[in-house]
Length: 124
Image (tube, rainbow, N blue to C red; front, side, top):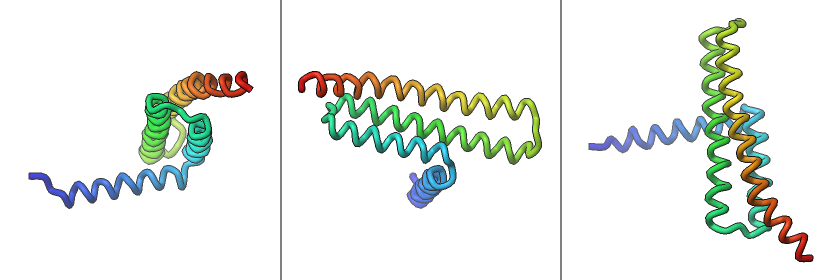
């Protein structure tokens, strides 16, 4: 049997984590701002359902990676508050993963939005 109280409590904890991510993490706020701009551009350019699915997936992947990176950094800081070369490597790798996803999202955005922008400005 499913314990629905535990399910609801888990969702509350997860929701708090998402709120904290955007409230306290500067890079997450940058990603949020850029996502808002992309969504605005997508609305203006009237993206197809498939294009929206791809764009929303990219946004979600970047946000999820940022959340995992933040969790790893906080855990590293707790485990090793001082400088340690292995901790530095772990933190660099996790932030590098976010960068890889962010670059991929930009490329996808340019491919989708750029094509629509070219069509819009070339037809005028």
